Image 1 (tube, protein in one colour):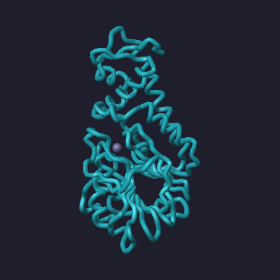
Image 2 (cartoon, helix red, strand yellow):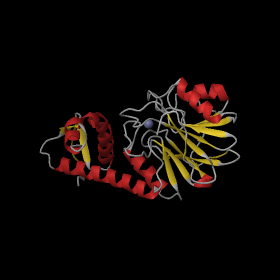
Image 3 (cartoon, protein in one colour):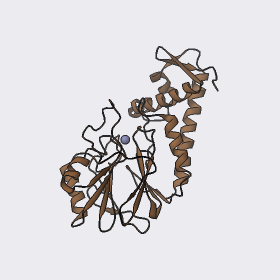
Image 4 (cartoon, helix red, strand yellow):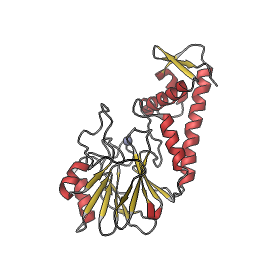
Length: 282
Ligand SMILES: [Zn+2]
């Protein structure tokens, strides 16, 4: 996949194109996917970072066709800052949830109006269902293209990497609940914000849930084996002994999310920033 070169990824009656932004990196993998949905009137999903070249690539892809809607999965810097410049050029209606207060997320983001879980946006040729999927961040939305059962998953489900869950805004319990909820939808494919379209949705979701369960179980074993409480960093070294050290700071965030979930369940406890097995421990 080459940045700036659209690729057709639709799986049914509604044309969908994927346009890769030029922001590859450790946090974004190959870069952010911007999607253009529709035949005659377009919706653009996740315009990406502010980048005049990427903005021009979106406008070139649209050509004469109007861009009437901009859908935003969440307000991290690699997803939403491109919204304002694209909106200014097109007059599109912006749909998404505002950044959580004091989160440091994209302050430029402005939605056209409040929106809510389950809402259906009628785009004429197609319709989008909003699905609130907190966990990665509290204001995360997935968008279901109803005609083709194609789910745009943002950073909730990624191809080839697992999403970072960073407290306090990120929450492991909510993340797992939101994944379980997606299993109840009749999905045909997942279109993530990073990586390729995935065609076996249930398998992908089950794999993610198993991955999180295995990590939690490893964390519980490590906690049970300690004679003294440990710092988050020390625990991360033991629980994430299978990843490249460069990823440890990110893994620490997700580990903290696991610990907070276990603390709420009485299976871990913390004092003075040190963690130990909880009263209901394994
Ligand atoms: Zn994100």
